[in-house]
Image (tube, rainbow over all chains, first blue to last red; front, side):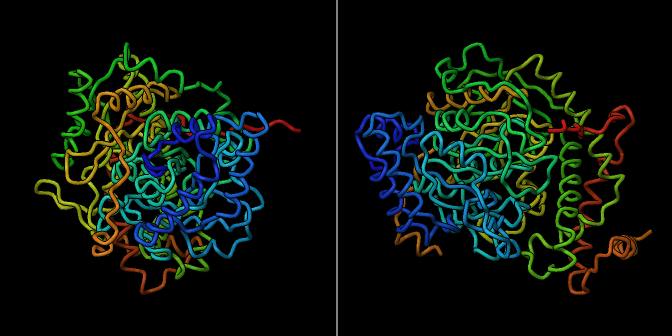
Amino acid sequence: MTVGDMSASEMAAAVRSGGISAVEILNACCERIERLDGIVNAFTDLTPERAAREAEGVDAAIAAGRDPGPLAGVPFAVKNLFDIEGLPTRAGSKINRDRSPAGADALLIRRLRAAGAVLLGGLNMGEYAYDFTGENAHDGPSRNPHDPGHMTGGSSGGSGAAVAAGMVPLALGSDTNGSIRVPSALCGVFGLKPTYGRLPRTGTFPFCDSLDHVGPMARSASDLALSFDAMQGYDAGDPVCAKKPTRPTVSALNEGANGIRIAVAGDYFGSGGEPAAHEAVARAARALSVGREVVLPEAERARAAAFVMTASEGGSLHLERLRTRAADFDPDTRYRFLAGAVLPAHWYVAAQRFRRRFHEQCLKLFRDVDVILAPATPCPAPERGEKWLTVGDRTLPLRPNLGVFTQPLSFAGLPVVVAPLHGVARLPLGVQVVAAPWREDMALRVAAELERLGIASAPVAASPEPAIRGAL
Amino acid sequence: MSLDRYLDDAAAMIGLEIPSEYRDEVLVNLERIEAIAALLLDCPPAAQCDEAASVFCPGDVE
């Protein structure tokens, strides 16, 4: 097994036992990035000198007999809307590069660092996170490591690509309407969008405050749990962060899915995707012996409300930049932000009012089930540059519809793990494992069970560089 | 009111100039949002709550 194939848990165990040093792991990751990033375009900012200091610190702690933490020596990278000390927080934009460098790391970077992880840089993303494709006019598109002629999904496209390519075993992303879950599915990696308000967003550049979440992407459910546990905990720096007790998830994974009541989401989630997207859910359900179907009522209306809320808050957030620097926006976000800026207040408030109602309906549903399975995307990764999605006899704009299955769930703030399935189609697909609010442990347990059953997996993408270069 | 006129008036109200070369694309996106919003705005009163979801919590003086 090469370092690139190791999970975060395996790396940390090896470092803690003295089997390999944190510096050796870091060097292996740097070599892989050097070799592959010209193709994958996952990184926008590399911080190797800083990473070397941090890795040396981990090795020094071990040499001195101190515990470096559960993520000892694990290299990680973050979507470039997370503050990294000394760098401007670009959030995928040209405009933000003119900002002063961040004076401190984002809180979740600090928490991962305190657990022994090593920060290796910032990752490509769709501009201001208003994106499901992974394309970016300023930094170029992130490319899917499984086939670089195809999209990574977005907006955390660099995060999905870096993990799928084995550059780092762990990355952070953000998810407003699906921006962790879509690239996790299309790149074939595991992703966790926690409950709204669970992980503090302190030190990240916002998009739509009412819907913004942050979370990890990795190559196993246990790596998600390991990093999630290291990042949990209230922080007053994010007004949305809930004062809830933390709920450790690593220890819960050993319990498997025993006793968890699981159902498949029907109705809205049961059609509207390519057959393979629904077959992925069916495979997961069969493996878990799930025969029950439930309906999230008014999911389509929830998606509509999330759509309006996102456009309105996004347009409002960027209003001054739209007034003064509209030409500097990525064309793929510019027109949507401009349209969002002029929406009537009534539409926005109607969305907020419906949100409360939809959330109540979701809570009712979770009285009878613990976990719900749903497709993550309507299709595997489309070709880069594609603008349209054809499902059956319908042709739809691709960009908004990649999130058709993720958007209603984040609108309700529910925690979701994406479990990646390989082999259903030529490129990976994802299944959303959805739990009741604050029950990330349930979703992680079911995702881990799918992994144990051999249904879900996140192998590092094969990297036949010459063939890949031919596809560019 | 037509969407064209609405765009002009609403943009003027908030001091946002829409350059002519952007106008068609902005209208396409406004039409798209309007079409999607229709499902929300047709929402029967029984499916609405009087209270909006957003909660503002005043902080303590430190």
